[in-house]
Amino acid sequence: MFFERAEAGNRAILVHVDFPESDHREDPIEFEELVVSAGADPATYIRAVRTTPHPKFFVGTGKLEEIRQAVQDYEADVVLFNHALSPSQERNVEAEIECRVLDRTGLILDIFAQRARTHEGKLQVELAQLQYQSTRLVRGWSHLERQKGGIGLRGPGETQLETDRRLLRIRISTINKKLKKVETQRNQSRRARSRSDTPTVSLVGYTNAGKSTLFNRLTDATVYAADQLFATLDPTLRRLEIPDMGSIVLADTVGFIRHLPHKLVEAFKATLQETAEADLLLHVVDCADENRLNNITQVENVLDEIGSNDIPRLEVFNKIDLLDDFQPAIERNDEGVPVRVWVSAHSGEGTSLINSAIAELLGDEVIEKSIALQPNELGLRAALFERNALVSENYEDDGSVSIHIRIQKKDFKQLLKRFNLSEERFGVARIKEPYER
Image 1 (tube, rainbow, N blue to C red):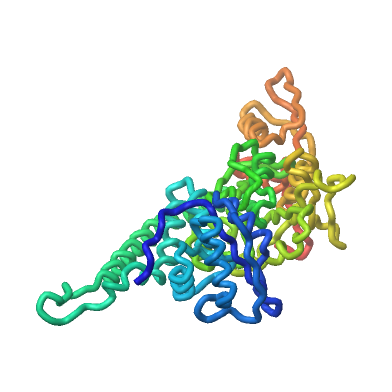
Image 2: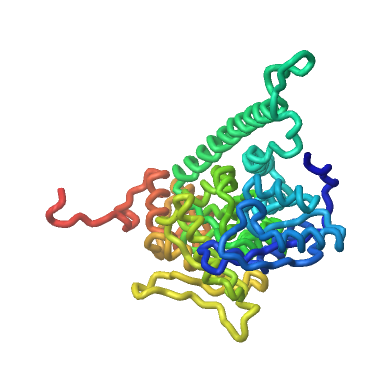
C-alpha cells in the first residue's frame, strides 16, 4: 500500500542528476528558475552524478536515503526532479521517501496551468495534463486493480482503475473536439489575412528572452511581461503599421525551453500553428545570457519539430542595455539582407530598426512620386491617407488635388485596381519586352 499523500505545499527539495556522457543534459540553474516560477520555495538542492539512471529509483539507494532525510529535516511538501521520470520510478521514490514527487514535465505542466488565461489555453493545458496523468493512474488504486471472485467479492464488471481510464479517455476526446473547433476558427482567420495580403510575423524564442516586452514596445499593447519563465502562455495578435510597407499581424507566442515535453507540443498545436504558418519569424535572443548559443539551438530544435524550419527569420538580439557600451545596429549578410538586429525592448533602443528590417525582408519595391487626382478620384486619396502613404497634398481651384505619395508598388497597384484606375496613367504598369505579346 502507498502512503497517504499530503496536501500540496510549496517547500520543495530539488534533485538534479548529471549524466556527463548524455546528449540530453539538463541545466540545474534553469531548473531552479522553473521551480521559483511555479511558486515553490526551494529548501535545498541535492545533486548526484551517474552514468545511467537507476532503473527503479532513478537515483542510487544512497542518494535516495539522502533525499528522504532532507524531506524530514526541511519538512518538505514535494520533491522535484530535473528529469523525466517513468511512472514506476515516480511511484517507487514516493513510496520510499513518503513525500509527493514531481518530475520536470509535471513541473512545466503546473506552470502552464497557472499561466493559462483564455479558454483555449486552459483546454490545451488540461489536455496535456490528462495525457501525462494517464500513465500514472495506478497510484492510489492498488487495492482496486483486480476483480475478485467468490460470493461478496465479485466486481461490477469494471475495476475502478478501468473506470478512471475510461472517463479520462472520454474527457480527452471531448477536449480534442473542442480544440479542433478552435483550430478551424484559427485557420479561417489565417485565410482571411491571406486574402487581404496581410503578412504575419511571429515572435519566437527561448522563454524569458523578452518577447512580450518587445511585443508591447512595438504594438503599444499591455501583454503580461515578467522576469520569469513562461510568463506568456496564451498567444496574442496585434496589427502593426510598418513604414513603407503597411500593415502586418504580429503574434506573441509561448516561449520554448530545452526538452519541451512532447505532449505540450502536441497539445499546443493550434497555438503553435501561428508560428508554423508565419511569413517571418522574429527569433528573440537574450544576448546577455551566457547560454544564448545553446538556447538558440533549443529553439531551432522546437521549430524543426513543428515544421517551421523553412520560414525566413530575423534574429533579434535583445537586452543590449545589459551589455557594456553596445549600440543598436542591423547586421547584414554578404548580399546585404538583414539577418540580425541588436535592440533593447526594455529601453526601446533600436526597436525602430526592427520595423526597417521587416520592411526590407517582406516589403516590395517602394515608389515615391507626385500624382494628380481629379475630383471623382478622391477615393484613392482617402485610401492612401488610411495607409499613411500620403506625404503632402495641394488642392487646386478646379477641385483636383496634387499629392506626393510613398508606398509599396504592389499596394499602390492594388488600390488602382480597386478604384478602376489605369496603371499606365500613374506610371506603374510593367513595360513589355519586345518578344512579349
